[in-house]
Length: 308
Image (tube, rainbow, N blue to C red; front, side):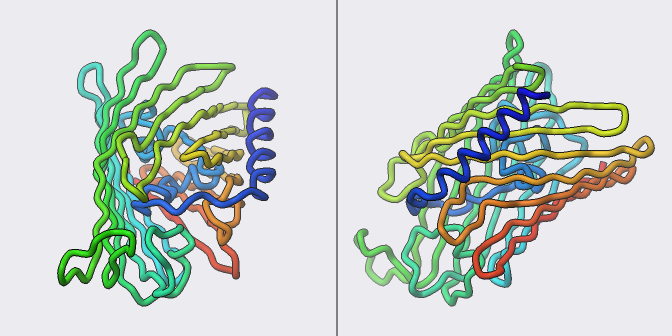
């Protein structure tokens, strides 16, 4: 348990110390920069094994009972939604996920956009979406995962100045087909992971390949359950990451609750690193909630649910 606390504390210290450096470069498609799992958000967006694992590391794909759905409201401007599920077929676990965000971009903002655009009031209609599929296979204690994804940004009323605009073009589409690979393995009583995401993007303003190293551990006692998670990532020479802790309590079989807090290095200056979250499991219903913070007293509310 002490090693888990040390790893998380180190990641959090790194996150806050890195905040003084430059923000991440502007990249797209935007949806690939957004957190998906409400539970992971409350843990500094560190990867955990849940319905939305395919968005973080395909090696964490685990069969789920039903379909997970998550929604987010970014202030009064952006609306986000995602669906995900997984099933076991022989030696493989197959997973899929889709995510979409609609928002209105500011006329003064140039493409590609930062996540802060979702909590700002704009006038230009924009959409960002992604669809993913992947598989996980266990070999000699190592979970190996491979995923492919289609991602696209659509923005009305603009065409980036550094591209040649087709005659009569009144909107812009940025489309990419990418791949993710990853592995996980038991270590120090928990799970260590390594993932490489967004392989194959070579566009002028596309999302660079991301390399991620993480660790998560569950500690169970007679009364409480603890989860510690953290990761460090590198994307186009920008270093990020985060971590957090969760405490859960089950008072009767099938009924439990959890609280969590975490922090991560923000993509842009308008974001704040802190996030908090909670979970309620009541028989066949599972609810997760997370709250992200932005400058200017702006927030993003995330809620996920699954009916088993």
